[in-house]
Length: 68
Image (cartoon, rainbow, N blue to C red):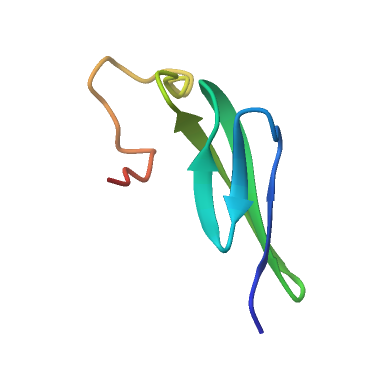
């Protein structure tokens, strides 16, 4: 069973053939749903930056998954 993908703002990004495609600058929630399981990630697109969690220091990226 393949997951169902969704993006919170289609003006910033979309899922096309299983690939996240950026369309503009901003932060979106990307959600994968597979049966009863759901997982959501915040993704910075284009020149946008993810907000730091409360209490985080500059250069502290331990709470984020970094993808190239």
